[in-house]
Amino acid sequence: MHRKIMQDFLDWKSSSYRKPLVVQGARQVGKTYSILEFGRSYYENVAYLNFETSPSLVKTFDESLDPDYLVPVLSRLAGQTIVREKTLLVLDEIQLCERALTALKYFCENAPDYHVIAAGSLLGVAVNRERYSFPVGKVDLLTLYPMDFEEFLLAQGDEALVNQIRTCFKQNTQMPQVLHDAAMLAYRQYLVVGGMPECVVKFKETKDYILIRHTQKTILASYLHDMSQYNQNNEIKKTRLVYDNITVQLSKKNTRFQYKLVKKGGRASEFENAIEWLALSGIVTRIYQVEQVRKPLENYRDIDSFKIYVSDVGLLCAKKDIIAEDILYLSDELDDFKGGMTENYVCCQLAANKYTCYYWFSPRGAEVDFIIQREGKIIPVEVKSADNTRAKSLGIYLETYKPSYAIKLSGRNFGQENGVKTIPLYAAFCL
Figure 1: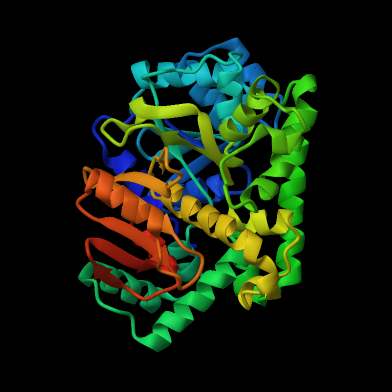
Figure 2 (figure 1 turned 30 degrees about the vertical axis):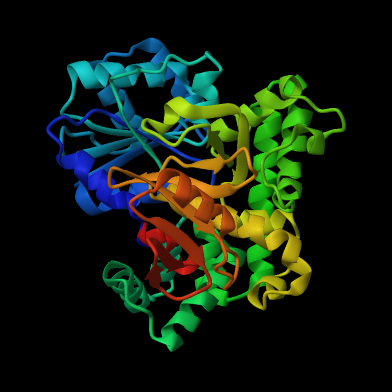
């Protein structure tokens, strides 16, 4: 399967400023597969070590952090001779070994010719619990997300459709209707399947939505297990409550997160740690409201007003127990959920393409779903779940801030009018 992160790996490998690389992301997004595929393709050999499956590995780093000591020992444990610049050394689930994280600093300072990639599913949680000594400034960082819609199409062998979508986006010309319809069908299939690599592979091989749903439920169960195993005891129940409630929040007309919907009388002080855990684990994405639309956007975020989206739209639908047919045929029974589901899809695409997203809410009640910085410009992105192109809130935003242009994602074909670029939902990855 083609993953865009491979180009990031290649850029890292060829950089004269290369440091040990840390790859983070939620469980099951394909970190280990992508790293090993990269190693097999571009190195003479790969030395792979996993702290989760080999707990005794921790003892090696207890003995010394010196690369000259570690390399021969790790070579023995991995069954591969580790050679400078020719071997990729992979340390998986590194969050389980505090001293291994610290050792990356010494590889950076004393042995930069060794190519080292470390990966961790709950690395953000571990580091922010102040138990682990993270080598700030001594490592490069990458985050891997579930496969976006482009990667999904490529996995299905639809490279020609991807190229056509990109061409129409670049030239701002309409897709031929038959291709537009095919892309919209694939988009709805993606809503069901999502971007978890195991689900994408099974869809390609079987087209069996029941099998895919079983796989998604297994992944969700592993997330619940992590909440219990790697969370503080007094936070486990709260974390599960928040996670289970996200689908409820997205079914509301106003998708801003409300504590009172998690628990009657719920307050920020009770659930903020649970939300932080979910965000750090990569299981959810949190985007903040901006009080003013000006650079830098980060300076104007309202930390008390935010939305939460599930990191994979397929897992969102699995959590909601939505059957595939209701999504594929746009059942009217989903009307209350379509808006939130579509926003969640767009958030996933933007996150996978390295955008930091915000949203805008005016005192008069107008709301724009996403505010991003693209090519140096602050751009509003309005999301519609169907062909409806009416966007009153976007009009208010345009009058207020007069951006260079605005983007409207919907079920309609490509187009442009009055400074608003209409882009089909399936082309969100082009942003």
